[in-house]
Image (cartoon, rainbow, N blue to C red; front, side, top):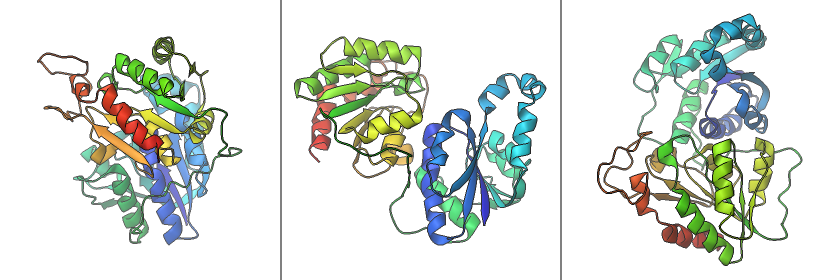
Length: 340
């Protein structure tokens, strides 16, 4: 059986889909997958043993300048790749209009969530087969249930298995155990305050651990450098691709993360991770895996699921909800994780 997955972004969403592939492989031993995914995340599906072909797409860039995408021939080249194989099923695992639109160009039975289950209800109009999945569940559970219904098997009664197999990476001991700070994220409201990171870095290094800080853009680099300037034994790393970041995480003693795709990657790799949630809810989108610990803000308006903090009272921090996740509490929980 040959199946095409359309799940283009984001990094966390791509990772949330992986356990569904593992389930399918257990229940349908002959199944193989191809995957349409944004260029930036194209490495991730290649690490799952059931994925044969990754079809990269630059949809985010193309949407900003669709005429250029057409004129350059990139769109036509993408369609040729998409139509090179006849699939048994085409699964839109994203449930958005943009991903549902892409199913129309693939060769196979188009499947996705129904009107009440999809993230964007009208996406369901593009599918030939539609399936109901209850909303009030974690994203990993929803993906596993969708695949099980499309491919006609019961969801295995086991914990999610990502099955990532990174090429040429082994988990080796390092000269000095280190903690990784995954401080970068997309929404302003997901950012744990910088002065909190500084306090935590000082506590970690004073306890004898080293800290390594990756970054993905100039603003994150500047923040990492400011954190590193406040204490010794902190390394700001060069810019790393996903494979190098994965190797860094695999060799870490632990990671501290905000709600970010790299936190989900750490979970998928089995890295002990303490994740901090302010405006978002770990019940539905938290990092899933062994040795994962969540700290969610205990605040009147959290989780608000908003990209902008609208709290009107006195704000000791911004976002306001993170005042309930002070560095002393995070350090306490991190010590528990390091002791495992």
